[in-house]
Image (cartoon, rainbow, N blue to C red; front, side, top):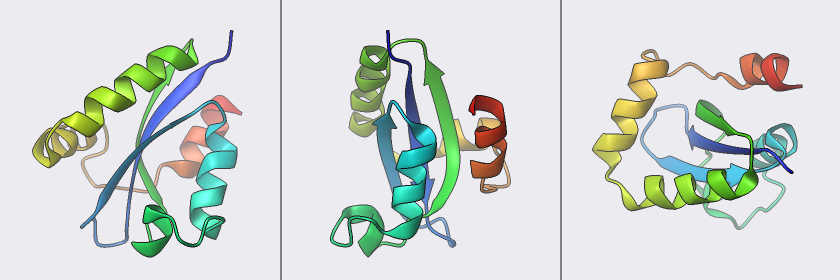
Length: 100
């Protein structure tokens, strides 16, 4: 059974949001930060600030949640972020110490 994560990235001005899911949060966020895929949406919009994470016991649950979040409005995503991270801080270091 593989665990999963749903996450939201933004840029330094918090103008664009990206919702993703992964089984390896550390590796995936490192790839976003380094623009490993230079033509990707996150690379083009400089989305390198992790502002929200949900952890799941099974990757399938994370995939379902990602679909749900992507279908939702920007306003709903902002509510989620601000409930857990009202200052929109980069929580990458905190998540790495929590999960790795």
